Amino acid sequence: MAPTAPRESLSAASRTSTPTKPATLSDYAGLSHPPNAKRQTRVIPRTIKVEDGSDGAVPGFLHLPQSHQALTSNDTAAILLSGAGGGVVGPSSIYLSLAEKLGSLPTPIPALRLDYRYPARNKYCVRDVLAAMQWLEDEYQLRKFVLVGWSFGGAPVFTVGGMDQRVVGCATVASQTAETEGIRQLAPRPLLLLHGTGDRTLSYSCSERLFQMYGAKGDRSLKLFDKDDHALTRNCAEAGNEIGEFIMRCVGVNVGDEEKQLLQKTLVGDREKVDLMRNGGDLRWDESVR
Image (cartoon, rainbow, N blue to C red):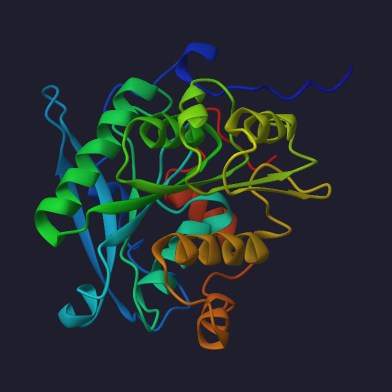
């Protein structure tokens, strides 16, 4: 039997089932910090209100610097969004590691690992992201945002990025193309696209198409990882560094030797990264590392 061709969408309309009940913080016990971290950030688990119904609350983990004074050094945060299963650790646990590193930089960048109430249903996921942005602004005076999404996560990233000027940059790993028309309104704000050419879940042609949709008038970058899979398991360390440096440039933080050394630290081992994805909800439903 011939292998199934990679799809271009993991949105709910392209599959038969969706979650019937949003996840809660209790579903993610033990996932505040990476396994090998020295816990240099304050992690605040929070259920964020979303004012659109009885299930109007979405869980997330906010990484902040230990010092409150350091928090005032910039007014920008990163929001890290997973795929069609939701979840809070990201592809190959990149988000779990990256959020800790961003929050502990010499000039720290707050990072929110945000779940979805109804994964793969973009209209609800967009409201989750907008609610999180408003919460970060109201509670921490964070007024600008860099959005990062994996797989289906490209849909809310580009929908929100295209409509809200508070978004100062967007990055995706193995993004789908469905429901991403907002990317046409993103330029000249920076764009980073990462994808594995061996991805059997969503073809790397999705990222090539998004690169073209963005247009030639802005700051765009596309990096393809030869023969790597949907979660970039072979190149997750390099991918995490690329995303980290991209976020720093969007925020205006210097990417010097100290910052590069911090980004290169291994906070999640190779044997842990996929198990943590399962524990963190990132491999529910149609999501995959293949």
